[in-house]
Image (cartoon, rainbow, N blue to C red):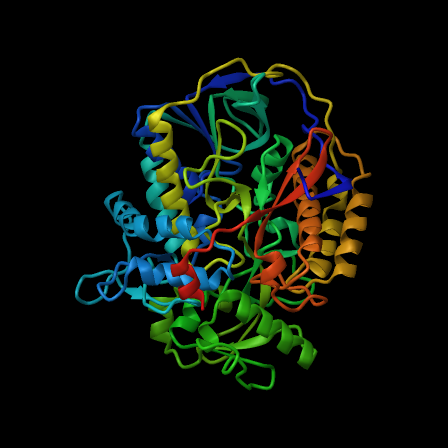
Length: 561
């Protein structure tokens, strides 16, 4: 029985599209080519299954390649999975699933070592061991990195090479997934998709398989400014909602505290200044040059991301300035060139020399802490449908993701999905509507800027009830802008679906916790809100929310006390 419904939040069951003009078949479909999707493809192949990997752009253009910091894992003799577990729980604000976190931190070290066997070249110290560093929220040096600040690019290169060399993996690029195909029992049996541009397959088609893995990344383009690339439009989450899958913790959106400030009118993907820069000694200052993180948290400038982002927003409001400064002038030019070559080049491309100048930074949307509700085998509430990576809500991140746990989660959950499917592939059955055109709903892309402005102004790092109600009303009005079947309008409809769900979830949670901050409810309310907020599309298209209790172990209580 659902606890909440929003009669004005109606989500259609399908996107409007033409009938599929071609059909392909595989044992397993994987949607997405970041660390999660590529790893899942490799692990699924270990069982001999055929894989069809769909990616929206080219295979190496997802969010993974932009990851600067690294991969967190207890690889140092002075570190331990239990230490990593405690840090993750502390960052998660009381909403982490302790068992899911334990799986992440205990299986994580081997997952990183396996990545090395696949060819990943991480940075080494003078003794030839992995060079480990520290990021916000970590009490130990446990961040493995590559190319100084180009870890994501190295991980992507490694996995892309392995996937492209496997003849059992068919790759379809420039493919926008549309909707899930199901059998008469409601189990996944494939997807419809639209292939953009030239290729053997073009236009709307269908790929049939009894197992579908969503690894589509986050929702960055819901906001005007994000560290995510332009292809990240919430497609996997919107597809899952339309298919009847449950989503959880969507209100917890991590705003990275130190994104290069390019001016108030900047839009789209913004350059990230990794918190590893602070891990190496950089300091935050207000516009007058005063430090402000001392006394806010025991880790000061290396506090968890939600703490730093809230402190920056507070200082920006107090000083009535649109940014703060990141002071890394204590680094030599040689150090910048060796340790942070990507960030150095990005700053200089925008007219800032961090060797001699402070870097203007401000929070921007970075990461979705929740997602499509899964267990730790990646299974969603729809049989045969799996999810991993940023689009999955495993409970690992809770109310705030610990830095550099994202790449690790993609590796670990992908392997777990491979093990689950190795046990038994779901039964292949006829897919309903696989050859029919669909008269679903579409919203015009003409309203994208308006949607992004609503979400940025009223559902950003600090929210309140009145602003969220304004957002919900504005989104309802946008829903009347009818679109036509095309890539831009399909994307816009996905953005609207995720934005509307997010705004309503944020309105429901009347407290501040982790990356969800309510100005009208500034305190954390464990008595009422130490729960998971789970939502799904009901049979009539109305979104329903319910509470799900979170088990708290005695060791977790000790870790977070």
